[in-house]
Structures are given as structure tokens and as C-alpha cells.
View 1 (cartoon, rainbow, N blue to C red):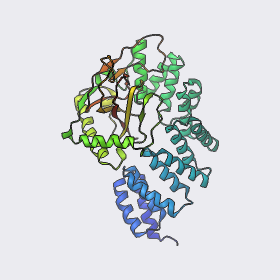
View 2: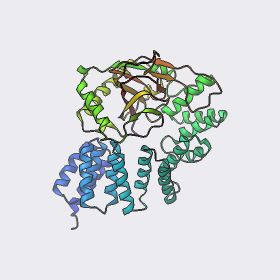
View 3: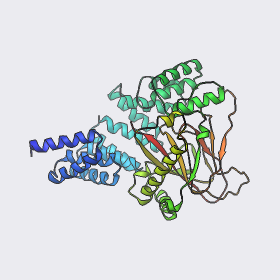
Length: 427
């Protein structure tokens, strides 16, 4: 059946709303459109994408699952369902969808690349590499996959190979990672010159901030950090009480969800004797997710108010549009999380659901520690002091995403459970 001209006009209007990121209106128009034209798969697809983009994940999954059943030979619908599953940590289901899409369309670049990213979530690095290399075979100048291949070499600290891929792309943090390669290859003069170029271009992000903090601290270089100077002075500790809207019962529900295997655990090489959820838990259609998001949004504004007079770049250039991305980390007896920072965040934090009584003698056991030293960056034998921050159950600790942080190992029978989150800019 051929669509009428009116149907096509309304579909085009719906597509334009989605492309303009007017998701609320796109959903309203899309729901009316699909009711009037229930057999128009394109309309359903745009409605599903609008649900997904606005965080209404359960509705998006319902739409895409229906589409894959009614149009089983559509690779696009399979891929869209896979992307939606991955958003909430259902990685294995996402992988199945991407594989189905690729069987239908072996040269579907978006599905091949998405499959590679899903493999990374479960630490299947070689399968991820194969996926990205397949994309490059199909499109030798594909910016995203060049970037992801460069990141794979960063993971193994092969700075030379990483630099080859990163230098040639402008996607994401590629140029900032190239700056990272210059530091790790010992090219100090080139590092300073390229940092100057990035600064003049207005590049500001936690990755560059962490690099410059490392150079300032360990090499005593007097250079301005465009993201945040003295980041440790911008650590904030507050509290979320039951009366703020997140009850002990909701906390138990969140922990139960984490342990229930409804969400695939994310592979995390920095985490020892612990587990980390995958996907963005804020997107779950669960009371604990909605209430906790509301509480943390308020705490982020408290943080900004506390540093309202700061001249630091990450506060002066606070992103106009951002999302909250959250995950849960549980650590058992003897475990810890190694030092790292959050290159794709802006402001990072942890809300402590349970801090166990420790059986060891160390006064800092189980606490969070901060440092300016990047753990994989050259130090020249110099030592950087770390600052340990005292935390208790129901505390929330927030800090610039550039700041390196770790947990101190502990001995105890209870789990150390925290909900970590990032304020992530949306471009």
C-alpha cells in the first residue's frame, strides 16, 4: 500500500522534530501518527528513537521489539533495539541484536561498530578490534572507528600505535588523547606546544585537565590548567538523607537490582574483588532510579552554588546541556578500585550506600583517595601525595572529573557499595 501525500508530510514533520532534538513534541506527534497510520514502520521507528533519546527506555524497547517481530528482515530495527538494550546494561541481548542486523546487512557500518563497543563492555577486546577494523575496511576514513581503534591501543599503553590512529581523527576526545600520547612518549616540548594549540582552540575537558595536573604536580611546570587548577580543593562532601527522597528501602531495591543479574556486569580491569553495573542506571524505569536522580540533580546544584565564585574552567564553562550517567560499584573483602579519572565526565561523584566496618587496623581503609598523579603517566621517579577523604554511609562526594581517585583496600565481611555518577556534556 502506497502512503498518501498527507502521510508522507506528517512523517517528514516527525523526522524533523527528532532531528531538531525536540523529543517531547516528537513523541506527542509520533504517538498520534502511529495511531492514525499503524502500519507505517518508519513512523514507529522515529517514535522509538524519540523515546530512547528522551530516556523513556521501556517504551523504546517495546516499540523496537514490536518492529523486529513485524518486520524481521529489517537490520535497522534490530540495530536500534540493540542500541537501546546496551543503554541500560543488557549487553548480551544487545550483541544478539547487532549480530542479527549484520546477518541481514553484512556491510551495515553502524551495527558493526556498535557490536565492537558492546564487546568492549564485556572485555572482548579482540572481537571489538575485529569489528572496528571491519568498519575501516568498509570506510577507511571512518572517524569513530579510527578513534575506537586508537583507544584500544591506549588500553595496552601502545602509545606509538595509538597516536597513529588518534592524530588523524577529530572525533570525540581524539586530539586530547593524542596529547596524552605525547606525554607518555616523553615528548615534553611537543606536549606543551600542542596543549597551547588545544587551549587556543577552546578545547577543555577532564582528560586534558588530568594530563596538565599531572605535569604541574610531578614536573613542577607553571602552566595554567584550562579545566581546573587545584582540583583537590574542589572536592565536596554532602549527605543525602531519607527525608531528601531516597529511602533505605529504595537503597535496598537498588542493591537487589544490582545482584539480580537483570543487568550485565561491566568488565572493569581497575576493579579488584568487586563488580560494576553496565549501562546507565538512571534510565531504568524503577522508583530507585527516578528518586535517586532527583536527589543527585539537587546535589549537583548545591555543588555549583558552593563554588559559585570559582574562576576554574569547568565551572565557568559549565555545559549548557548534560546528562547524568550512573552505575553501581560493589567491593568485597580485600578489594579496591585503582586510581583513574573520568575523561568523558565533567563533574563526578559517589553516593555511599554502605561502608562496612573494617577489621583491619588502617584508619583510611575503604575510604576514597585523590591525587594529581595519572597512574599510567611517566613520573620520572617523583612522588605525588594523595589526599584521603573521610566518608560515611549516605555521604555524597563530588569532584572535578579530571581528578584521579581510588578506593583504599579494606578487610571486612560486608560489601562496600557506592553509586557512582558523572555529569556528562551533551554536544
